[in-house]
Length: 233
Image 1 (cartoon, rainbow, N blue to C red):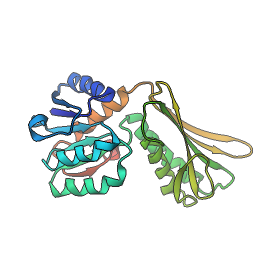
Image 2: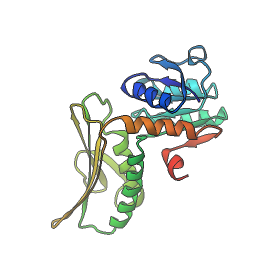
Image 3: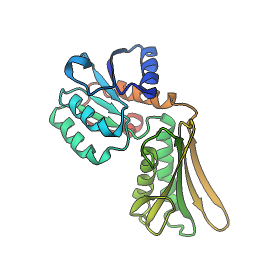
Image 4: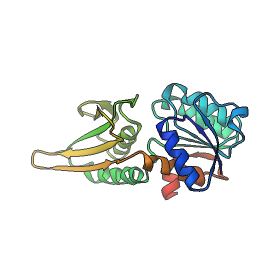
């Protein structure tokens, strides 16, 4: 494939190396809003930028009927509009709060556990995420996806909130530490015991590999997708 990288920070550089090692060509590496001239006619765009510019970056590419893989979090109030633009331009869009293959298996495990625990009121549920201090959004997109998975499977919760779980509001603790790629934990605590499931990333390479696999998978498809489609679709 010919790949354009929109957002060429730490993640963009890792994606560059992994995509190249898998035989793909990087036709542009951008830290500015993409235009048709500087995108250089890619087969797909992989977008890892900042919440402030993600929507415009994605919109510009989709309006040129270029498929977009997006891993930028913190802009999702505009996601329905992006999905409409993708459909209107007969192209494809795939958003992932986390492209790690392990994390997406963790999402599935989280939903299964939430379903098993939904009638056990003696257990209090709490989420925790730890990331590097450079991460701009809190809680992380991955933590929000985990919370949404619990809410979908447990009728006792209607929404998530930062800090402690309270009544029907599922709590997420967001912690920032130096050079932590990402750790996510879900706790079920009672007076007598605790159940914990946890995913720890050792580097950003897993996120980058998943994004490239998603770009390979989306070729020839139209519509709006998630990593669930890539792994289990």
